Length: 178
Image 1 (cartoon, helix red, strand yellow):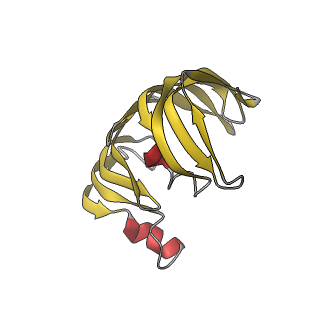
Image 2: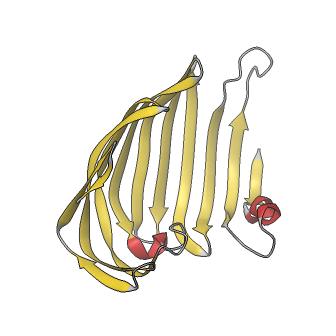
């Protein structure tokens, strides 16, 4: 059980004088019979989740177990963001079977600058779309589209500002296809 636990307490051990990830976590993770079957359930909330001091929003992570299958509902809301991952995953030998859906109703690009490890800066606009992730974790089948809405960002390595509006990126096993 967690009650207003700061994530920076853990990440501070990884890299001193740096806040890689922060937020205030509350909720429960339960292992009902850990000695016989390592299944768990969770209902966690992380308020003001941030990465490298850029706040993404609030996260609610709900995972329930149905035998060896885990049903998942993880949502990111706030700061203009609204996205969730729903579906299930299950251990399968040395691998994991995936059946997940990423539904991005709105993801503000400026909130992702920290998560992108400074690969992009000066970001504005948003993306939306849906991506299906299925199959084995070792070789997932990834398929979907993300759409840019009034997007603008600078790619740090190139030093140039890019503007993209009403354009689509396909997300596949091969990566991003413009």
